[in-house]
Length: 161
Ligand SMILES: CCC1=C(C)/C(=C/C2=NC(=C\c3[nH]c(/C=C4\NC(=O)[C@H](C)[C@H]4CC)c(C)c3CCC(=O)O)/C(CCC(=O)O)=C2C)NC1=O
Image (cartoon, rainbow, N blue to C red; front, top):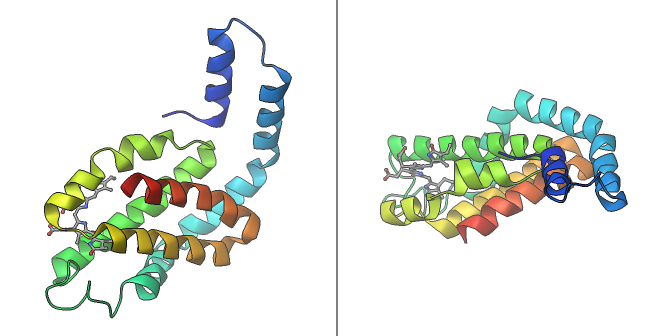
């Protein structure tokens, strides 16, 4: 896993240079947003269960996916989906704190599309749920932090499609 700081330092180190002004500016923006990131992570972790419940209600409940024959039909599969949504939320929060998407590539997206395809988990429905989660989180943490979390939800959606 990488973060906004290690990415910038590593690329300067490779060149044997101090951080240039562009890198320093990026670092400064990251430090300035630290309080916003920490507050957003606090709000998300205190409301994670609620966020997942609202996401399911907004995007999956009463669709073909939860009806008999759908991929979320039966308690076991419903619970697996809720658990996956909680993974997405938790890892998007880690990535938002780090200011970097690499943890999503390593822990969430690596092999996920293949797993979903082999189990018949609908990718379209999953992406719809991730987009709904972005809206639920934004309405909870406000537009600035919501935009930042949105970067990581979009990364998950793009990695699945
Ligand atoms: C921390 C990283 C991590 C991820 C991301 C992960 C995902 C993951 N989701 C799975 C299953 C599943 N995932 C879903 C999810 C859904 N079905 C739908 O229709 C919805 C659209 C969607 C929820 C949004 C379902 C229903 C299953 C069970 C499928 C089955 O066994 O038939 C499986 C197969 C094994 C299992 O059932 O546990 C994995 C590995 N596991 C991990 O360790």
